[in-house]
Length: 111
Length: 114
Image (tube, rainbow over all chains, first blue to last red; front, side, top):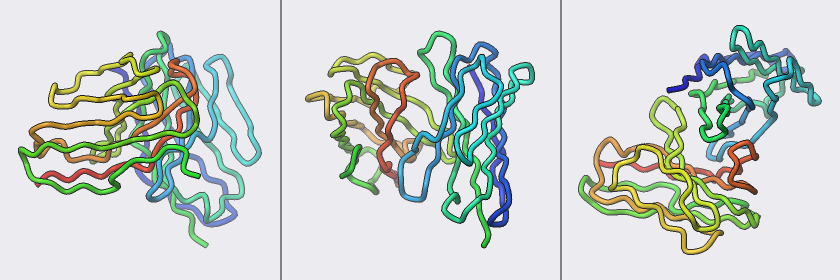
């Protein structure tokens, strides 16, 4: 089956940039997503990128996609304490019938 | 206003029992899902319903039976609970059955089987 991997933990200082990385195995992915999960809450879609794009920027968020290496990253500029959460990447397969999530990266922002 | 709500939030029960988790969405969405999040935080889709019709049924034991009385509700009934069923279960909904659509998640139900 498809596989999506993320590092477990990232710690940054408030005001710094955070980069959360994700690798996946399905070379025919169509959409790739970043979801955010705050404590005690469900996942919330942050942003997504279509597989024919290299980069997408949305305010403080920048998504980079390297299809050759099957690597997705989420950069958060000027990280705030409110950004502390678990971030999940997910990929949608070519058939559009399977959405595979990674295990999540816990981001801790220190004041 | 809670878009996708689940009850209960926590559920502790013994092996062999039968339990249900309820999910409701007030977004007017046509499609609802159940996911299981294991101890390593991996999220796996279990079921998907579109307008009360089952459209995705992943390899899940028959002990798990979803029920959709109407398109705003998707309940999960689990028979003969086992230790391995301990996990956080998330309900979600989306506007359309295509998985490319944004999914809105509930807060999760933490099930502990002892």
